[in-house]
Image (cartoon, rainbow, N blue to C red):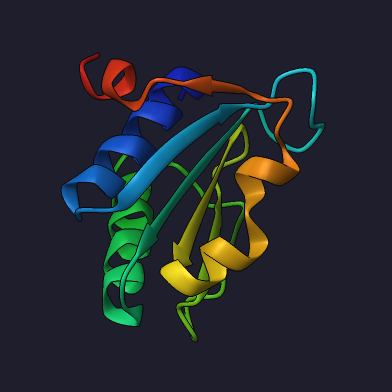
Length: 118
C-alpha cells in the first residue's frame, strides 16, 4: 500500500473514533523512521484504546502488517508503526506533557481536512 493510502487509512480511522486534535506532520527529510506522523488524543483510556484498535483493525483488513504496536496495555500513549506512517494516540494528559508537535516543530503540518476529503 502506498504511503498516502496508509496516511488516509490512519487519519480516517482515527477520525471515525472521534480522535481529538488530529494532526499530521510531514516527516520526509526530517526523520529516518517515517514519512508521516499522525498525532491525536482521546480523553479517556477507553477512547485511546478504541482509536488505536480501529487503526489496527483497518490496517489488518487491508493486509497491512503492523511493524510495531506499543502501549495498548495502559492506553496512555499508543504507538502504531505502519512503516511509512507512525500514529501516536495519546491520552490527553500525556499529549500535553510530551508535546510532539513542538519537538518536531520544523515538520510541515498537513491539513487533516485535505486528507479526509481524498
